[in-house]
Length: 196
Image (cartoon, rainbow, N blue to C red; front, side):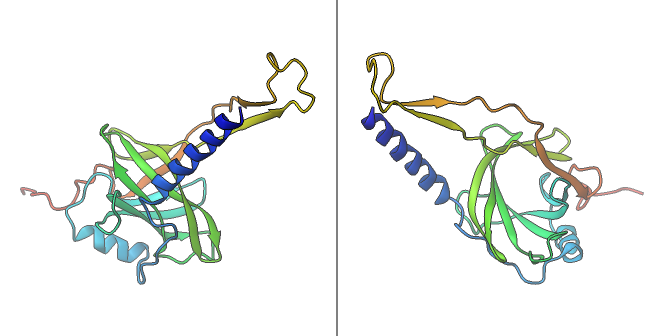
């Protein structure tokens, strides 16, 4: 069983290394970006449905999502614009998004730890974009494992010395972002021809 445990640990380490290498291990800072400047940036581009200003009500934050080419594997970056956290500067990249084979599903990385104003350790999960592109919901990963050790090794054929038991985690309501700008949430308000 020790071999299985070491194989499991190595697999988890390789998996963590694989996704950690996709996005930067720590956040970056884009000076001069706040909610007003983000609106100007969005007004000057041909918007994709995902791009815009979003509200993250669970954390009392306003975020901007825009296309970017800087990070291998990520199509969009999520930028902190405003919120209750006075230590986090507007313009801090708090996560990334990437398209998947399913149009409504996106790969989402959000930084999970912080060292003062620097965010660290991106955590990966799957996000779902609504059909009208007005909400982006996700369920943070739940990893819970029970390890049982039988030191007495009584009846080893039945009760192994080390057992790994998955623990069921109760289902929670997904959390996510709501699009604030452009209105309507379809990302097509600008750069379209209007006839009078």
